[in-house]
Every structure is written in C-alpha cells, then in structure tokens.
Amino acid sequence: MSNMVIIGAQWGDEGKGKLVDLLSADISAIVRFQGGNNAGHTVIVGDKKYILKLIPSGILHEGKVCLIGNGVVVDPAALCKEMDAIAEQGVAVTPERLKLSRKAHLIMPYHRLLDAARETNKADSKIGTTGRGIGPCYEDRAARVGIRACDLEDLTLLRAKVEHALKEKNALLAGLYGGKPVDPDEVMAEIAPAAARLVPYLADVSSELTKVEAAGGSIMFEGAQGVHLDIDHGTYPFVTSSNTVSGNAAAGGGVAPARLGRIIGLVKAYTTRVGSGPFPTELLDETGEYLQKQGAEFGAVTGRRRRCGWLDMVVVRESIRLCGIGEIALTKLDVLSGLKEIRICTAYMYQGQKVDFPPQAEMGMAKVTPVYESVPGWSENLEKAAAWEDLPAAAQRYIRRLEELAGVPVSIISVGPDRDQTIMRRV
Ligand code: GDP
Ligand code: IMO
Ligand code: MG
Image 1 (cartoon, rainbow, N blue to C red):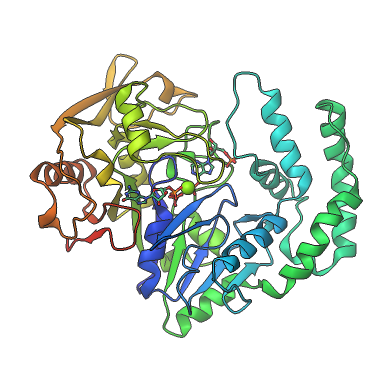
Image 2: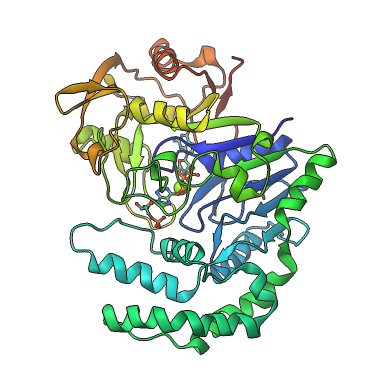
C-alpha cells in the first residue's frame, strides 16, 4: 500500500500545499478530510502561484482524482470561485477530476455572519478565526441540523431547511448580536447558482476511494490546519472546529483506519501561528521579525501577519505521538540562513517543574516557559541545495538534533517554495 497522510505538526501553514503537490505525482487520488476554506495551501510551479482552499493540492497534476471528503465543510459559492480562479490559471476542473462528498456539510451565508458576530462580540478573547463560518457550520453538523451537499440536489428541501435554521440563527444574529436578520431568499440567491454548478460533482467519495484502491491505485490524505489547532488536542479554545489529527483522515475521508498508510508530519524549521492563542516560543523581537520577513509569513487566506518563533519540539513530539507520524518533512529550512544562533525548545518549565509535554489545563500552554538549547546557525543560502551534501554542516547538525529529539527521521527537506527546491533523503 502506498497510501499516505500529510498533516501539519504545528499550528498550520507548514507547507502542506507544496508537499502534497510534490508527492502526489505518484498518487492516484488526493482527498481532503477536514476543515474548509479556512485552509490556504500554496503551490508554486515555475512563475505561477496557486492558492488552494477546498480543492486538494493534487489538482495541478493531470489525471489525478481530487476528492472533498465528508469531513470537510464546504462553502458552495467559495468552491465555485476557487474553481474559476484555477480555471483562469489554466487548470481545468471537471467532474471526472473533482468529486464532492454528498455527506459534506455546507457553509451557509448565516454561518459566516455568525462567525463574524461572535468574534466581534468577544472583547479580548477573540480566537482570530478566518471568518469563513467554519465553527458555526460544524456546530450545526453536531446539532444535527446541518445542510449537506446532497441537499443541493433538492432545492425545495434545502430551502425548507434554511427557513427552519433561520428561525434560530436570526434570533441570534438580530436578537442577540444586533445585526440584520437574514432572508431565506438571500440565502437561496447565493446557493441556487452554486447548486446548479456543483451537482455534477457530487459523489460517494468513500466508495470512490475504495474503487481507487481496488484498481491498484493509491490515496493521499491531505490534512488542513495543524495538530495544535485540533478541536480536542490543540490549544483549546484557540483552535479550529475539526479534528486535524491523522486519525480523522479515516472518519473524514470515509476509509478504514488501516488504509491510511505512511503518516508524514510536516514541520516548519521554526514555528508560526496566525490568530490568537498560546505560543510558548513566540519571538516578539528582531529575530521574530527576521523570520517573518525572510519566510514571507503572511496568511494565505486572510493576509494576516503570522506570529513567528523558534522550533518547539514539545509541540512536534506531541503531534508525533498523537498521529503516529513515522517521518518528518522539514520545510522552510532556507529561512533560517543568516542567523548566528538557532534555538530549539526541548521542554517547558510549568508550575516549577520541567515537563516534556503540553500541559492539559485550560490555557496551560500560556503558562509555560520554554527550555531552550542552542545550536550554531549558518550563513549560506540554501535555495539551491539539491542534496544532503549541499547543506552546510551546521544545517545538517540542526536536522540531526531535531531527529534525535523527535525520534523519527527527517525524510524530506524543503529549501524553497518551488517543487524542485526539495531534498529527498534516503533514511
Ligand atoms: P500550508 O497551509 O501548509 O499549505 O502552507 P501555506 O501555503 O499557507 O504557507 C507556506 C508558505 O511557504 C507558502 O507561501 C509556500 O509557497 C512557502 N513555502 C513552502 N515551502 C517552503 C520552503 O521550503 N521555503 C520557503 N522559503 N518557502 C516555502
Ligand atoms: P492551513 O491548512 C493556519 C486558525 C485561525 C484561527 C483558528 C480558528 O492553511 O494550514 P477557523 O476559521 O478555523 O475557525 O479559525 O485556526 N486557522 C489556521 N491557521 N493555517 C490554517 O490552515 C488555518 N485554518 C485555521 O487563524 O486562529
Ligand atoms: Mg496555509
């Protein structure tokens, strides 16, 4: 079996888009299993830049099937817009190449409004969501009042569900938050054209994946966000609303857990986070600024500046443990060039004790002090490094130390955004 799961081991934006694009060359089908258009996965090919939010990042390879699984929350209008955007860039999206699970829940305009209203009304405890309506949509799924992609096939039924939902949503939007009530006609004006467009793409994604394997093909599960944004295992409440851990690839894709295959954890050579929430190794000094600038750390979805800090191996080790990560793809190593000293967080001080795991108490992660070790930096530009031997000794030492701390090998090293700025290592 050559199936694989690609997940972010930090707080998202580890470079999943680049790796999925690169590794999917030998894969038959790529499936998203959670999250929605809160994700922004960048793929750079030559002088073209694609930002994929809902469409799996394997779409640039002809002949691959890309699937949006039942665990994803889909904004129909946003999906249509994304299809248009990549069509304009010369990538044809057809129902043969893109399949949307009938079981996927749909983000409605009132979910986006609620997301915004809730954030606005949180004085100093804003999550800093992407504002895409992700949380409210997953809430409706759990409350069993959600609208699913299969409902696009019956707009009379869909409208009835919208009217029912709006009784409660408008009580919140207008009654509690002082906004304008939403009219069902407005909702339908957005959904109906998207429905007409998306119905041909509806599929039984779970069965499609079974067929892929039966025909001897392989599947890649493309994670979104990162393990520490997981609704259960992340820095709650500053998390997203889905399980981002590898285990959810099975539930959210509709496959048996034994079919997941290799689990590859993506680790950025330093740490970034967008939005609020604890970030033990955050750097609020010129080094943080350096990483932000060198790494061009701006959110691919919202354009917000990403917070930057040193690599946190407590965070990474927890992801390895939770997800069964067997190998690491280390990204953005090139960004560290030019730093005299590089720090790695190996443990935390928490309540007077040294701990090597994230504390579980509410906001425990906000109360830890990182324990660092220092390694020498390097000045060489890594952008052209094509093999392990091309890396300066100090960079090799950094990676070896990281492997010791992780207990799993670094099998892939990324030294630039382009497909070929990648070192494949035999480990
Ligand atoms: P994702 O959400 O995990 O797919 O990551 P994003 O696309 O949000 O952010 C990663 C950014 O880093 C993108 O702009 C990529 O083009 C870029 N990138 C990926 N790998 C590398 C790398 O090794 N070096 C550099 N300098 N940039 C990279
Ligand atoms: P990719 O897949 C980084 C963050 C938001 C916010 C929190 C909750 O590109 O790595 P949400 O809109 O999901 O309710 O926001 O999660 N967040 C991400 N941060 N990368 C992402 O995706 C993210 N998706 C959501 O910034 O802090
Ligand atoms: Mg991203």
